Amino acid sequence: MKKLLLSVLLLLLTVFTAACSTTQSEEKEGNSSDGLHNKAFPDALAVLAEDEDADILQVNKRVYKANIGNLESLELTKENLIGTIEATFQEGKEFTDNMATKLPIGAEVYSTTENGVLIAEYEGETVRYRALLDE
Image 1 (cartoon, rainbow, N blue to C red):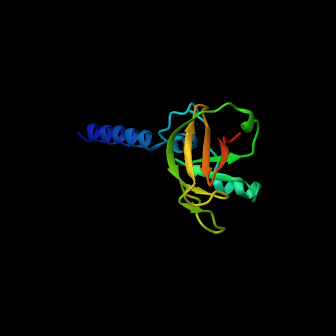
Image 2 (cartoon, rainbow, N blue to C red):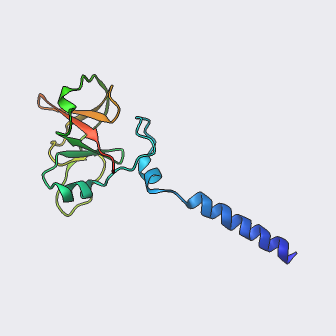
Image 3 (tube, one colour):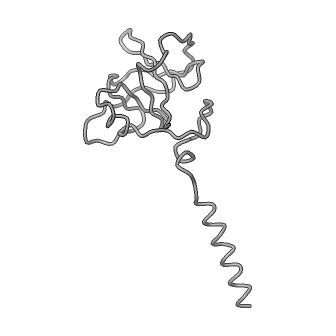
């Protein structure tokens, strides 16, 4: 009887441990289906530590940055409104979803036809952002 009880406890412990284990990329991956599966996403504060003037925003726990690569030359179509900027980042505060460093509160953020690229619009201005990935 003791052996059976011990076996059941070990089995439960193994199942519990396996169920609670995740990798960093799984935690950051979220539920989005934008083609960036199984990638690790950098933290906004880490991005700002490297470039304190970075033009970034965070949506669905992913950090997006403007002015990188060939963003302006991409042919994009604006799709769905996915949110608005609710706060501007301030030093010493937590960086949260729907927060940006340069965009004003109320700026609208849209998905696009290009995976990992968003468009923000405010006061007649349009800015393109690309999702950042850890290397």
